[in-house]
Every structure is written in structure tokens, then in C-alpha cells.
Length: 506
Image (cartoon, rainbow, N blue to C red; front, top):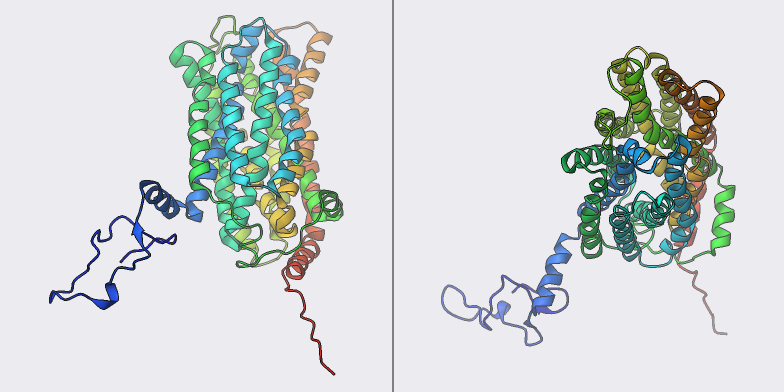
């Protein structure tokens, strides 16, 4: 007889109280237990859900949610020319959209990190993704007289998305360990470029299909609500540190202030967070400005007309989105495989692979602004190689954090790393690039050529920041092994059972 763990018969078992052998006699080993009772419909549904709650399925659902997270974030970038035309705003004010989004994201991240280390993580994730989905849908109905309200809506979306980005990697970290965890985190962080690229494609496609850019903001919310339900039903909330300790339970928990002090003293964590900020600076600026920069290059080359209509006709957002999807896939896969191979040669492989990829990326990103004036195809080739090298380090950076931070403060560590990387990175880079571009345009007579050159000069700041990030990864490599050993020692100490005290009678 089949029995579910809560003491009821599950579907597919005999409904009668007798189970007979081929000879017709009652089999004593199969007699029905009088304590068992038929499953109620709700219990059957719960049993079916439990069968679907495998670690691999949970990682897949969390990765799907991360795709939607970044798809929503970059759908706006896919229709940025239309938004600028609709609201009649300057480059710096368009850059403000992403800056406000990231500022609210990074301010909320430490709060969700604190909650994620102490409360039910999947409930927080489900509520967060539901919140940003509803806000995104409502923002598509804001009229052109209320640009400030549209900016505010992006700030609210940032709060919702910060809950997801801060907590979801820690669940994967508690479901897997060693190389399996590296692979699953690679899949999870593959969602960043994939979702970003799909955001551009979705925005451009929905705009063209509906003849109205507002419809670009009405597709991802439906998928987001679906993901919210899947997370609530099918994603478990494992015990913190269960994978690392093979089922052991960390007995002690420290205060938030103690956690922050420990993270500040963790040099690998600090340097890798600063390197992550350099990546965020570049990707945030590129995400907003590269499609527009390439469109301006086409205008200079006289292969496109300046945007004067209600719907701007440009394929650059869609092409850039497709390139981002492909380079993200290649970057994350190459990064995971390269790191796994290099670990056989050196234990410092993780930060060293990140450093080399960052320095190589800076070279090709510089070349974008050299060749774009003459060849759009040449610019796309440089973007392809530069992004592939830049995306190599996303999953590896998360794995570095899992190695050097103990499980009970990982959500706090992810959240604070997110806070610092956005504060020093993409919180200001889109606005800063737009501000520099506006200042250069005001300094000289405005023309199509100068609008193109001014934005290119502003974007040249990015490769220098990327080189700085490579230096931070090299610094991480110096301290990586020491910090990894300290984290392992703390975990072992925290999981030791209390020593028994023997009392001898006299």
C-alpha cells in the first residue's frame, strides 16, 4: 500500500481495505493499516506539489523569475527613443529613469537582505515580484504630462525587484554545493543578459505590433504574476547552510551589526564588491545608451533619419538585445567552464578569471567608439566580443561570495554587495553619461554629428572603469584563499554540538 508521509493513502493505491494474492488469500504484509484514511483532495494536491519540489525545478523557477526581473528592467531601454520623444525630455532626464530605479533598488536591498536571513524567503520573493509586476502595468497608462510620475513608478519597480535579486541566489546556495552550485548559479545569472536582451526585443516588438510604445510595458507583468505563483507553490525555503553542512544546522546566529562588521573585514568580499560595481557602471550605461548611440551613428552615416515621428523606427534596440542574449549565454557558459578548468591549476581561479576577462573586455569596448562612425557592423562585432568577456564574471562573482561568506549572513552579503555595486555603478552611470553628453552638446553648435560624438565621448568613461574593476579582482585573488578558509572554519565551529560535561560522583 502506498502511504504519504502525513499518514494518508495517495492516489494510485488500492481504494479497498483488502489486498489479495494470486491464490485469493489475504496477504498479511499488505493488510490495511486502521490508522490510514483516504486522502482528501487538498492532501493529494499537496502530495503532487511535493513531488515537483526538486532542487533543480526550484533553480529553474528562480532563474525564470530572474529573466523576468531583467526583462522588465530593460523593456524601458528598448523604447527609450519613444519615451524621450513622448515626454520631450533631454538625455540627462532620460538617464534619470534608470538612476531613480537603481537608487530605490539599492536602498531597499539591505532591508530585504536582513529579512532574507531571518524570515521565509520564498514568501518575500513572491510578494516582491507581484508588486513590481502590478506597478509596471499601471505605469503604462501614465500620460505625457506626468513624466515625474513615470519616473516615480520606476523607483517603485526597483523596490520590488531588489527583494528578488537579494534573496533568490541564497536559496540556490542552500540547495547545492561545490561545482553543482557553480553550474546552477551560472544558469541563474545567465538570466541577466538573457532577460536584458529579451527586454529590448520585447519592447521593440510590442511597440511595432501595437503601434504604441506603452504596450511594451504590458507583457512582462503577466509573466511576472505567473512566476510569483510558481515560486509560492514549488520553491522550497531550505535551512540556511543545509547544503554546506550536509544537513547540519548552524546553531548560532549573529546580529545584523555583527554581520556588517564581519563583511567589512572580509577583504575578498569588499574587493569583489568594488569590482562588481565597475561591471554595473558599464552595463548600466550601455543598457540605456548603446542603442541610441548606434542610431545616431546611422543618422551620421545617412542610413537612417532622425526621430521626428511618434514611433521611432530603429532596429538597433532589437539587434542589441539579440547580441546581449547570445553574449550572455556564451559569457556565463565560458566563465563556468574556464573557472572549473582553472581550478585544477590554481585555487585562486575564480577571481583571476574575472580579472583577465575584465581587462580584455575594456580593449574591445574602447574600439566600439573608434569604429562606430564608419562601420555599424564593426561596432557590433566589438560589442559582441566586449560583452562576452564582461559577462564572464557574473556567476563567478556570486560563487566567490558563497565561498567566503558563511551561510547565515549570505542574504545580507548579497544585498549589501548589490547596494554598493549599484551605488558606485549603474545608479549614477546612465545619468552621468547623459549629463556629460548634454554638457558637450551645449558647448558647441548642435548637429547630428556632434550629438553622436558627444555621446561617444561620454561613453568612453566606461572602459576606464572596467580596467579599474579588473584591478579589484586581482586584489580579490590575493586574499581569496585566506577568507575562504576562515569561512569554512567558522561554519565548522558553529555546527559543533555543545561539549558534554561529565559529572563524577564522589
